Length: 275
Image 1: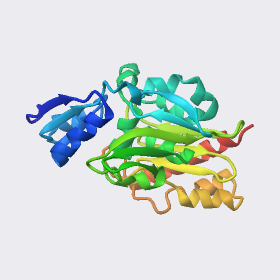
Image 2: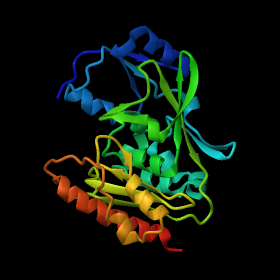
Image 3: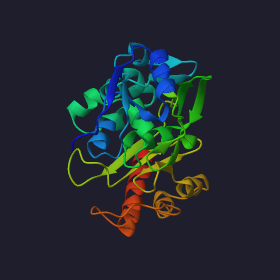
Image 4: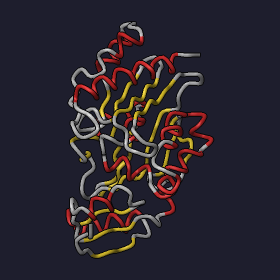
């Protein structure tokens, strides 16, 4: 449980962080809140030669409205997201999901950008971003680019972010007033990772995202298609596991997780559809 040796440097700005990434390449890792990276270091699943601490870049911590969408700085903590009045009004699911992460000490240190860049299929925030139809902004040596949430998560613990890029902002559309939503999470103990969870955002085109049902955070196209064709909650939820490849571990096998997905999706659709 002791990390391999590494050098440590503090980046005081986004440009300084990008310069460090350019200098060290694949051997560098960015450190923000540390709740995703430090466990990997302790188990030596990651062994970078350089850690670049970006936790002091103040201009990456904000939540504001920007040209019709909500913009969230990548270093905003889960607590910032949870307590934001702007998000509670414009994207209430995101604020609620942030409140379900870990315990207060985790929420005060962990960052939304770190959670999304980690790309863990068992994590809460990626599913919320997918259900909200959001995107992220990455800054690199060639400028900035916007990556849709549906294109962000590419494989297990891998994302479309390049080694020389820094995730700087998360963008979510403002949800129409009164649009229903729900996040249903099943875990054995409080503060545990979800065994399965379901995020549902209703609207003209309902979006449904699942946690821990594939190697990446994923939307359920089968449920979305069923809802789009007018299916009720029970019938739509019945196909929640269609096309999924859930993990099998001590918490449950694929069949168990498939059953949980159907149950949680039905609950989420019913709650999101209730005036």
